[in-house]
Image (tube, rainbow, N blue to C red; front, side):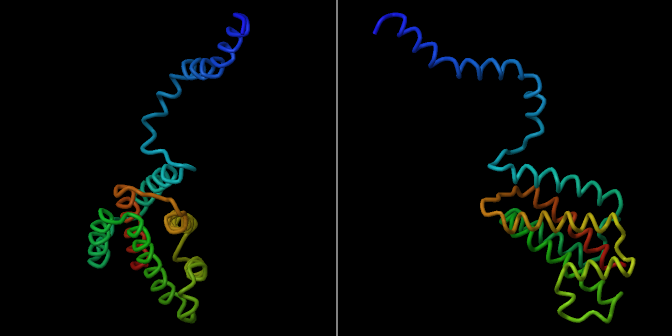
Length: 183
């Protein structure tokens, strides 16, 4: 191997690493601004999305709905928050069951003609609550968002969730359940 071939091979092997370093150097300011927004980055960003979405939903619900004050919701919230420290994913599923149960109770109160099968179908329950003017457009979208977050926790195989995110979900779910029980 002559010296020109040697230098050519060295340059070829260094081009991509140097290019990446130059790009990172040029984009360091935007990247530094993004780092505080990240809590944990996982494959396909499921956990990061869940964290952001549940936080936004919590803020929206807290602005519009009073805090859950009935003993049933308070007891449920405390039990679920304790479970979150042990199994955050299970907590999300259990908290959602509280919302479904409260929705079914509200649907039975406002639409007594609904059968037992109907109140076990969340879409029919939600439709009945909308038709009875119990759930307005904003509440409808909040309930749908809550259901979507629950589905992600239930069905994404490698989904991991922090206890803090589960606590936020519990707060939203118990507040929503208390609302549905009060209407």
